[in-house]
Image (cartoon, rainbow, N blue to C red):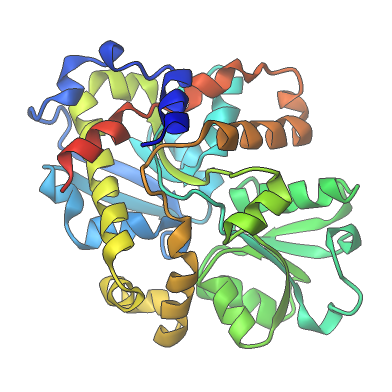
Length: 344
């Protein structure tokens, strides 16, 4: 861990001395069976979750994880707020939104360092749509309204001088349904993730305009790194169930380490066949293209968290007067740091 990451931990209020003892112990889990919500589990955005599940990494730490797959990240958040799930694998930005509303929801491990979201236009109209400045009046497909794919598209439009209301947003889910929506011409633009984007690119259905699968593409759009997928949960759950929280983080951290060492072909073999969208070779290429986006430490960079906050502050009227002080409460890096000492 470098000096900036250590400072990030301190800045996020993650002083080691303040963590309750049980979270650093290998004691019994307070809640050995938990329910997790996710929106679009088959997407590479959530690959570490699938790997942790399929390879038994949660079970390695005594955790029985039931996973509920929703149509999009916004619905996962609703399930957490409503109490039907205990944890969520979702976009970091949701923790900031909830903190701004006075709901103490925190991320405990970074899964993706970059959003890996791609904005692409239907090839048939690519000669007329060259950038987000041309999105006015178009139909834009996203996983679900309010999800990270939606926010990214709105951010790109705002940078070009447009408002969200200048286009129509359509929830197309993930996987095959998203591919079909573009192929049938139901949408003009898509803001989505691999393997959906990889499939549409390979089939020549779209022309890519914005690509945050790389650090360069992420910084071009956001001006900094931009932490994306993470594990987030309610602070009261963390306080009541520190060992359970640690076990969940350990499982995801072990998955991140496994992905880092595995070949793309090994990754493809580890996920359900339907995740390949009928083209395993293409899926392998998509994994290769995304490998660098997965977190190396599980710790979010301070400038990345600030860039997400700044984006939300600019886009959402409810965030306009919110202090940046909420950033410190949005991420608790202590569990990821401990996982690094536990997972081999």
